[in-house]
Image (cartoon, rainbow, N blue to C red):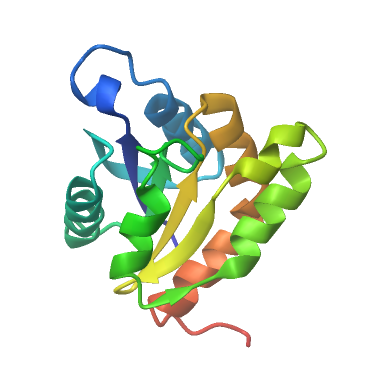
Length: 160
């Protein structure tokens, strides 16, 4: 099964053109490396309604996996987890736990991350760090579980 991916960069500065989006392109390359097909990309400000709209738009375009980069830290404008949780039908806590646990081996600041994964409609949404290196590393930590999760959400017959 080919996985259709949407990538959303959450950044006030990048959405205004004041900063080059580096996270989105890094996730695009990482997605291709996993054999996934990126079909939608967007850059939105750190606003809950904009994040929610982008997630829903990507799902409406056929994305089975939506990756966000940015807004998962502790700054007051970091609202990605809150925005995504509000439209989720369920949270998958193992994704965030694994990302934090493995990232702690790389940086002590991983404990500050609020990465998570949820189900929105029938899509898997994974919220990743804003730093390109961290986003790609965290995606790599959970990537092996993504195909099975997407298959189950898409009701593809599986072995379990």
